[in-house]
Length: 481
Image 1 (cartoon, rainbow, N blue to C red):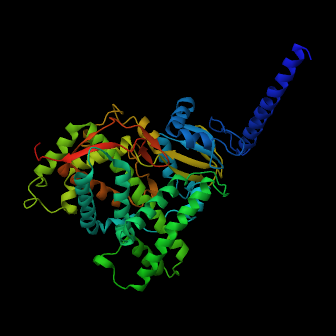
Image 2 (tube, rainbow, N blue to C red):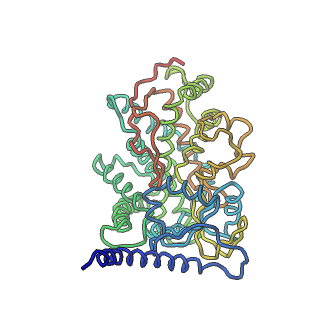
């Protein structure tokens, strides 16, 4: 065979599969775009639909923030894509997000990806109203303070030269969430039982956003197996509650409130639905607060001047004295800590634990010159909306004073949306606000610390966390400001 024939053969060998692949991608794109509403004159948003069936899910899962930033630079504040098995439009910017969030039940409805609905259950989120948390915050304070103080004391006693903050904070937040939300003492199961629950929860979270393929060793398969371990333990707890008339500790946890709410509506208690609701409460009250608390440690470790301002506020309020003279922490005292609250807001602005929220279009809607067809998923981006908000100057700077006066929340509530917004804002946000403020108070008056690797690289999977787990050296606070 001559040289020319060899070249031609090689070209056919490599070129034909390439052409077939490109043709398949083009046909897939045409198939997805055929879902546009032809009665609407507006075009679909710009964007690409990725690979056949897989869409752009793999790129998004593997690259996360880098992938999303590339998309934003290329296509702007509204673009189409294909994620988790569904055609999707991703939306950012205060005005665009406002249109989506205020259109709840009229234009859009909450709908998480199929993998999330399969693992957590179809009834996302539970029927426990945020107001029910709001009226019981005073009962949370001593429980949270007890757990946080014990954890920080252990860090100072046993941490040595290096402590990996993120896994430690996750364990702390898991214990708090189990006690307050489910009325369950993880320590009752012993160290091995607690570790098994934490590991199962982490495995479930890792696989929460995956392709909807339930085959052995797939992400969905692993997530369901981990979920079943959690459900078994929660069912034990629910049956114990049903057998006990009076709540332990004198206050009702969130799961008890949910059970009462169901019975109050004349409905039968459904064990599967209760397990799903309890699991989801743990997801909202454990992973997200662990992410935010870790980011707080990182930002305060990098900005000692801000930590000192927090301590000065605590000193003025009588919270930085000797233990015998310190004020008792309660809701009234916590609400007076305005600067500490601004530190938490600035942390949530720069590093929101959840990058976005999921909706589905109930009818074809028009947004900023584009159509979003009925039945398409809509993701509103929290992190990107914070990044592009005109309300904030020097957006990359950690500056809690920007929230002192006037409050960006009052000026433009859709420029700052760490808990989402509209009718379906985060059900646990009141719990999270109290927890993070107590955590900040106890941390500031107990510890000094140094980040051993400097500013952390953050990753999303699906909750924001430091890639290196934030190795940190802790020492006791001297009391000197």
